Length: 387
Image (cartoon, one colour):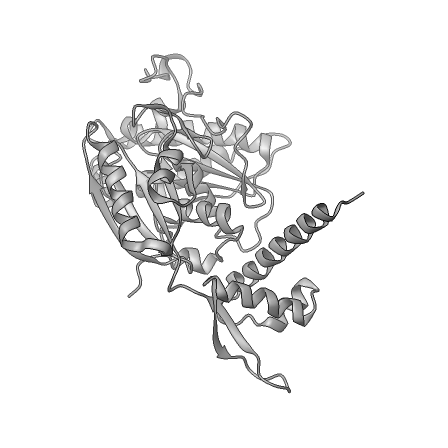
């Protein structure tokens, strides 16, 4: 039996859920949504819908816009995302540099820049950068999304070989500086979140594979990340897929790992680094040994075939620097994974969408954690700087 306090708690929870529903409807149709539209979509009364909208406007999450096209009566006022107030700070952390972006509520980057540091100065520079952003944005800062190369539970960097971090409570550290919620997200998971968001109605499993200096994977189900109970899902780089004389040594000490054939270094040579820009990677591809690239495609296709047979994903997306390998590599992966194995089906394989900004994944993860809403595919694709 509910007590009076239980009833109040329940009413507050229902109110919060309805606010999220109303806000998501505006995010889905910013500039054309109306109070009446929210009432129809939610089944709430017009008075309740108007009350929700008033609270969202007061909190600077949405704003009133132009009048909608008349349907015979008084013209309704449209509702849009308020992109002029709240900001999400995104930090994409790499060993000696970080990509920084301030992302508005409409998904656009209002500022982007890179910061550099050494392994010795990294902690100090990152802390100072967060403090600098807080001083400049004040109460406008809504949340911080931090992308890291390594495993994380959202609060702690459990392990990052690249950053040489182990059990680092980075979210707590940044929260003490920023005074707002901080969410950590693995780099491959962040890319997978962004790609899943490009589907207006995501359903089923989607497999995302990142190939760069290493190889990692992430799985989304109905658009939501499926991380696993130990936050280790997608660690496929050191699964053996090549055997016998064809198996090459891997940096982990074993032979025949997926990474030893299909990571960018083994395919393009020792000159490759995750720090290279796209044009530099393309230059390496142009003079690379095509046999090594074909070997990488074959190894990656074997991994895709096995995982695909298990998950039956709606598609496989290849991201990271591997997108610069061009159509030949993609076609080889498709051909090598498309052989007719009894009981399996061909799975669409494509490259990641190049229009998605590097900040999209961690910004989306932070937005969902704080407000419980998602950007539309159009907002994710238009996430670059404002003109």
